[in-house]
Length: 446
Image 1 (cartoon, one colour):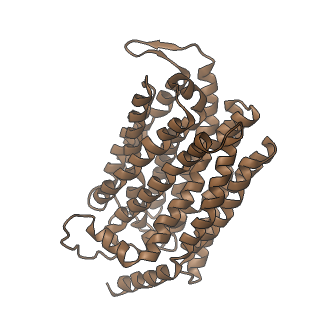
Image 2 (cartoon, rainbow, N blue to C red):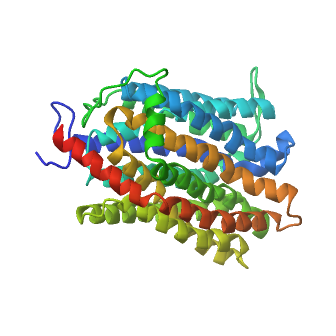
Image 3 (cartoon, rainbow, N blue to C red):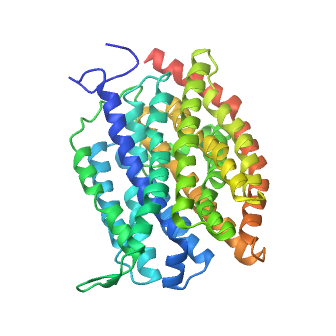
C-alpha cells in the first residue's frame, strides 16, 4: 500500500480520495447555498425594502457571525465524536434552512433563516480538516486539501452560472401561490430549489467510514473548560498564531469582497443577472481551481525540498498578488477589463483555503486539530466573511456618494487591507518553522 494515504481500517488505498471527493461535494453544496444570494440583490432589496448595508448583514452578519461562532463548539465535538455523523447532520440542517429562506416574508425571517444556514455549515470544515489530516501524510495533505477546497470554486461557479439561469427562468414565470404561504416570488423559489437536494448528500455522507485518529495524542490536561488547551497552544506560539489566524482572516476580507462583484456588472454596466452570473461563475470555475492546484503543487514541492514554512510563505506572497486585482478591478473603465481582472483575483483566492488549513494541521496536536481548524474558521468568519461584504457596503452607503460609490469603496478597502495582510502573514514565519520542527520531533519520539 502506498505511504501517501492512510485508509480507514479494511479499506483500499484509494478510499481516502473517495472520502475527499464526498467532502468536496458537500463543500460545493455549502457554497451553492450561501452564494446564490448574491445574484438576487435587487429583487430582495426591492421586496423587503432594505439598503445595501442591510443586505450585507444577511451575508456578513446573519450567516458569517453564526457560522464562525458555532465552529468553536463544533470543533470540540469533532475532536471527540464521530465526524461523518456531525457533518451529515449539518448538511441536513443547512439544506432545510436554505429552503426556509424561500419561505421568508420579512427581513427578520430571512435574517433568521440565514443564521440557520450558517450554523449548519459550521459543521463541515472543522470535521473535514480533521478527517483529511487523519487520512494523508504531511507531504500529500496540501493536495488533498486543495481537492476538498475545489468545492469553494465549483459551488461559487455553479451558484453564479446555474443560479443565474435558474433565476432568469423562474423570474419569467408568474408568481406561484401556495396554501398557507401565499404568493412565492422568483427569489423564494430559487432558495427552495437549491436547498432541498442537500438532504440526499446528507444521506450519502452517512455511508462513509470514519478514519482512525492518527499522530501524537498528547495527554489531555485537566482544564477548567475544554477550550483551555487550544488557548494555551495559541499563547505559546503568538507570532505563528497571528499569521495563521489574523493574517488569513484579513486575506478573507479581500476575498469575500467579491460578493459584490456580480452586482458591479449589473449596477455599472447594465448587464442582466444571467450575463453577470456567467462571467463571475466562469472566473470561479477557472481561476479558483488553477490557484488551488498551483498552491497545492508548489507547497508540496517546497515541503519535499525541506522548506517547512512553505504553506505560510506562499499565502503571504498571495496576499500581494490578490491586492493588485482587488484594487484595480472595481476601477476598470469598461466591463470587459473588469471581467478580465476577475481571473487573477480568483486565482489568488485559491491559496488561503488550502494552505492555511494544511499549515495548521501540520503543527497542531492531534486532539486539537479540529478545534484549531475551528479557530481558523472563526477568525476568518468574524473578520473575513463578516467584514468582506459589510465593509464595502458600509463605505458605499455612508462614506462615498454617487453612482460609483460601491467601486470606490471596494478599491479603497483593498488598498488598505492588502499590505496589512502581507505583514500579518509574514511576521510568524520563523516561529512556524520552529513549531514544525518540534512537532516532527514529537512524532519521531512517540
